[in-house]
Image 1 (tube, rainbow, N blue to C red):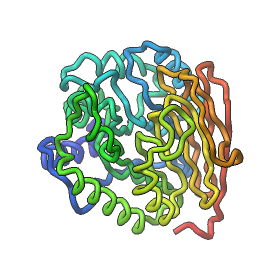
Image 2: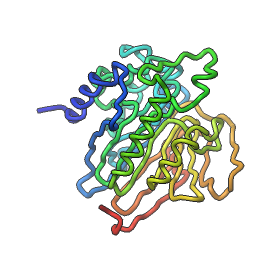
Image 3: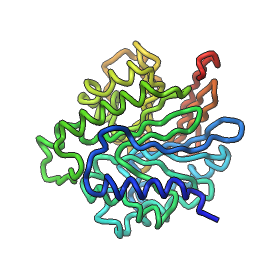
Image 4: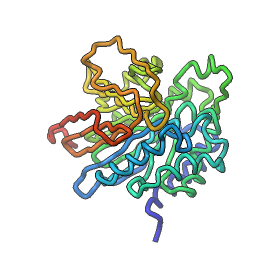
Length: 333
């Protein structure tokens, strides 16, 4: 009787109406949503970032391979790591870039799943609130975007966080760029609230796998490198709460970095369109850099109660890097 994602849409509408569109800060908790796992308890997920270029810069070619791999995987949902619409986000909710960069590009039947998205720095250069509007969900039901929220997928919890306001340079040296900071100012309060609520949610989480998703890098060998503000303010919270994976975009590459001092893995999937920047700078221990590819592609995850498997694919659909980890069921709660 109701659309497939009716419950998500209704909650989405209420949150938008009561909080986000009017620039208010939710100061107690992140909004929480649920997405069921498969009947066997597993999850199949695809991750892509930095993609929205109206099909250009090989975006359509990446989307084609995503559709092929997605069909084989029987996807549950897709994660977008931000910079959803270039070069300056959306003008408003009626911006044709939404159809031209999203609906008309990701047309494969396997990709008609819920997309869970965060905002990137380019998204903040337009009408940032437009991407949060339920009107876009009405145009294309697979679209879902909020600044920060929690997705409870049974065996895993995904903590989506708004990383753009952390970077000082967007405030102190924006150049000719204009950012839409509605709902962010005063900045100090916004960031302290976000960090407090994230820490509280992670402490309370009993999920087998804790995964944090943001746009900006924490650690990277790409052109943007490490985001020092996140290293200082966010990383300690992730490590203290035994987060398994931090997933991001921003650097237009595919990348996997391990931690020398914790199980935390840093995964960059920012190869959804324009890439090939020819940058690589990794002065840290070489054994931490498990994979780096300065090209286009995407990432997949298969998650069960005991295992997680990561695959990185190039624009031809070839597996370029694979990694897996296991946990004993004794730790499940």
